[in-house]
Each structure stands twice: as structure tokens, then as C-alpha cells.
Image (cartoon, rainbow, N blue to C red; front, side, top):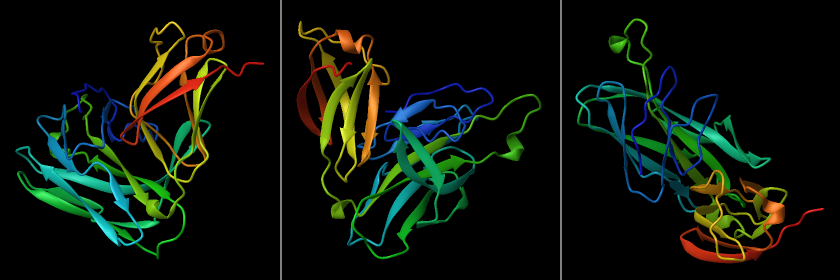
Length: 256
């Protein structure tokens, strides 16, 4: 689901999969990668870009995947595509430029009403273990639209890209409460997608959770959500959609 955003002197970001590729930029909207396409309206005088799909997977038998970029606006859209390695550290997403996959073309101008195919190609042979990336699709500035004293709002999509996911061990998830945080640790090898998280106390009251929404926990990593008073709430009942399946858990605080 994409919502319109107003951005001043920042790049308007549309992030596929719920995590934002910050790179020092402001996160403004989010998209669910289960959708088949996303239309991102820009404050940039009617620019619109449809992207499909919003998630890529290259299993061991695939040499590549494609993304369709459709310009539904009335003027050309200059676009740049880049690949970033994706990791998690201290509960936060980390990104670094990567050449582990070939992305082509990298800089394009999409004519009005046309679709551009972007190819993401494997360089080497398949290997054990899931590899995770983000494909950034950026609208580039258009000098013909520059106005003195006015910042140009632009678009960004970031698509999750999983390589050799079929050669990784399954996700192995464990919930815990530490301090005022609800943590989810993944000791397995595959990334898990978390949606619709709901936390209830022993009385059945739903507790507010910070940063609730679509999240990923990578294999070998831990993510967290803030709770108002984690250590004093007692045992909690957790429910969430994990990789499209409803899961439930009971968790007690681990407070020293």
C-alpha cells in the first residue's frame, strides 16, 4: 500500500518490503512486497512510476530475474538502478554498495506510457546459504524542471532480493522480552517476514508496540520493537503473520 507524501529538500522514498534504504535520507512511505505492482505519485509535477514485482528471488536454478518499470506520467522519467548488500546489526538494517549481481540497465530514461525491463543477473554459480540484497530504483533529477529556491521531490523504491534462498536452512525464531523491548531472534539461515504483530498482556489488552509494521529478520540476526513497560507487563501473548502464516507465542520477561 503506497500513500502520498510531502517532502521538502529530501528524497521521497518508497520502500518495498517494509524496511527503508536510508543512506542518509528520510523514509517517507512503505509498500508490501506481496503486491504485484506499486504506483508512486510524486510531488514532482505528476511523475508516476509503477514497479512490479516488489520482491525478487533467485533460487539455485535461476540465472536472473526481471523488474518492470512503467512510466504512467506524461513526461519522460530518468531512473537509476543500484544494488546494495543487506545485513542487520544491532537490530538495524545495514546497506553497502554491491557488485555481487549484475543490474542492467543502470541509468535509463523511460518514455511516457512505456515499460522498461530491468534485469538482475547472477554472476557466479549457486552456493549454500541465502544472500540478501536491496535493489534501489531512484528517480533522477530532471534539470528541465528545476526552479530557483524550490527543492525537487523524487521517488525511491527498494526491493528485497534473495539469492539461493532454497539452499539455506529454515528460519528458527525465538521471542523474548529484554528491558523495554520485544526481541525476535532468528538462529536459522533464511529471512523471515513479519507482519500484523499483535501483543497482549495477561488481561487480554493489546499493548502498543513501536515500529510496528512490515519487518524482516535476517538469518543469524535479531530485531526488536519497543514496549512501554516490557519488564513489568508480565507474560505476553504474541501473534503475527510470519511468511504468510499465522503464528502464536507466549513470552515472559527476562529482566535482571
